[in-house]
Structure formats: structure tokens, C-alpha cells
Image (cartoon, rainbow, N blue to C red; front, side, top):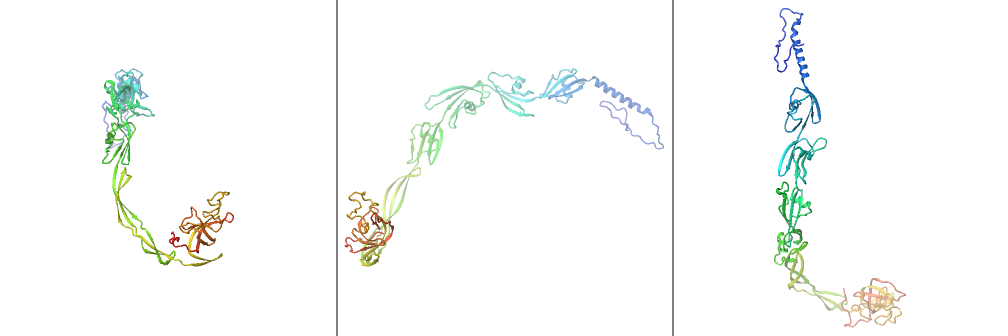
Length: 500
């Protein structure tokens, strides 16, 4: 065990430690007890001093942030005890009793950290410290009084351990009287006033039921602050806008305006009629709420168009050709007609055309076709015998009977009679007289002999209708060969050129 002893704070060492040295010539096993008495005496004195120090200390309890700590102290004031407990005194620390209070036995001292809070009221900003967490209690702790109608608004807060909210900044809002002068288009303003606790003019008017649009004129601006307003009153002028719809240049604007006339509205949008453009309603018409305005863009264009002039077909008799034979003697060629037209457009759509002039660029050249006039008699053998014919044609054949035709009703004296007075039966054929004249005899392949004794509304061109009785009706709808039999019509009754 070492003989080294460390001095207590504030005392001088009674001895200086020197290490033992071994004798050079001999060892001694005998110790001298008198050397330990000074040390024992010093230890006894120190122990007695400690006991006496503890016996004269005053017991106190310090509650720091709801955590009690009990100890004894020789400090004379509450402030000293708080510092001895390791708490640094500052504005942010709450001490109860006050720091200058003398210490008493078993005294309980409450210590708590105060939080800073900023209060805006009456145009002033007050910064203080409080251990309260309720806004009203904070204001009372800072000795700030409230007036009737005041409202406490926490504008900034911090979240504390446990999920609570601790206010950091408080604003006391006081009622402000807002006087509203609302103008009208007839020049008769209305005035309304109300009290509000809202922070800005815009929020106050909105809370009062006013609706605003960008085109409205509001003086002062909606962003004007009502907080700490001197005099507690503000007057505002509102000049409302009206809705209108404008259509122009294939676009539509739904806007609000304070303009007086249709022209003012167009100027506001940067639109203006030019040349032949027109406005509906006209620009001088006063604006009304919900009015629809249309600016019609008018344009004119001169265009040149060409269209063909169809050529005519001229038929010329050719004695060198047989009947129904044809030869082209001259090719036809269309001509060209050029027309100059003035086209008027409204909003890009054509609304009218007028011909400025027209002329023939190229005349048409007629087609000249030679048709045969030689009639050659031929024979055809059929189940009904051999027949001599002078023309062979192919036509579309249908069939009909008295009941299926458009004749009179049964019982009528003219029921079933053809225009030629012949009763309708097999052998009666309806034709187009421009192709097969009345009373022409013919042989129809698959039908037999017949004669052109009737006409029909649907029988036109290369078509015939084969007659039957109601008892022997056979339905037809197919192309057939028809042979026109003797006698040959006279030249003035002959159909020289058949339709295509």
C-alpha cells in the first residue's frame, strides 16, 4: 500500500511524498509505529469535518420540470440552491419562491423552464417567457388584457413530447368595421357595413358573402391587412364586372368586363373589325350581363374554275352497213368552259358565290357515228317453227297478268284490256314504242310468238313485259333473244338507232 496522500481542496500538503529507498548495506524487518500517527490523526480530523459539515447543512427539495430532487445545502438563498442543483438562472427559467428568498429548512423550490412567446396586439409586438401552455393563460401570465370582441389566434406553434401543442406566436385580433361602396352600371351606388375579425380585406369580404372576379375593380386591394388597423375602420369601393361571351376567329372567350359598349369589350380583347367584317350586335350597343358578341370575319376570293362541255353525238346513215351495225366516223372531244367566280367567306366558311364572267376556252368536237341501213332478212328455227326476221335484239324480259297489272279491278268492263283493246293473254307483249313500235310481230326465245300490243310505266328502253292470263302466269326476269318478224316497218317508222 502506498503512503501517498492527496490534499483536500483549499489545504496544503502536510508532507511530500518520497519513495522508499533500499538500504545499501542491510535490510531491516522492524517497522516503527510512530510514523503512522500523523496520518491517522489527519483522517480523523477530515472525517469529523465532513460529519460536522453534513450536520449543519439545510435539507431542501428542488422540483425541476415536475421531477423532485432532495438534498442538503449550505447555500443561503433560493437562487444559490437552484444553481447548486445545476440550473443556470436566466429569463427562460421560472423559480418559485423568487431567487432572492432566504433558505428555510425543508423548503420546496419549484423550477421550470419557460418558453418564449411572441404576442401581436394593438400594433405592438411583445416578446415574453411563460411556462403556461394555454393561450389565455399565457396572456394573463404576461399581464396582457383582452377587450370585448377580441379573438386569440395562434399563428405559430410547436409540437411537444406527448403530442401536445405549445403556442409560439399569438395574435390578438380586434373587430374592424368594413364599409362597402358597391357601384352599379346605372350609376347608383349602394353602401353596406359590417364588422369582421378576418386578417385581410379579401378574406373579410369573402366571409361576408362577396364573390370577386379578376375584372372587378376593388380599392383598396383585397390583400390589404386589417390587423392593427388604426381606428378600426376601413372603406372599400367595388366596381363589379359583368359576364360576356365573345366569338371571333374560330375562338370563344367567356370573360368578365367593366366596358360600357360592345366596342369597349372588343378593344379589351384586342379584337377589331377590318374591311368588310361586321359585329353582332353592333359596336355601339351598350353591354348587358350575359351578352353574346360575335365578330364575323369577312373575306372574298376570286377563283377560276373549268368544267368540260360534253360533246354531242351525231348519227349519220351509212348505206354500206347492215342494220344495227355502227362505225365511228369522228371521235368526240369535250370542250372546256372557264368561269371566274367571286367567293364570299364568313368566319372561314363559304356563304355565297357569284359569277364574274365565263368564256369557252375550247369548243367541243362532236362524235360522228355511222349507222347501218341495210336490212338483211334471216331465218331462225324454233320449237314453234321457222321464222323470218329482219332484226335480232337482246332485252330484259319480265312477265305480268291481268291481276298483277295496274288494270281495273275484276268486274270492271275494262278489266284485262290493253290500250289497243286486245285482252291480256299469252302472246301480248308490252314494249317501249321508241324501240319496238306498236303491232310489231316478234318471236321471244323461250316464250314463243308475240305482238307489241301494250305499254308499261316500267317498260323503258331495252325491256319487254311478257303477257299471260291469270291461270298460266309464268314469272320472268332474265335477258332473252328477241327476233323481230316480217313485215319490215316503213323507213319513216323504222327505229334505226337503238338505245345502248
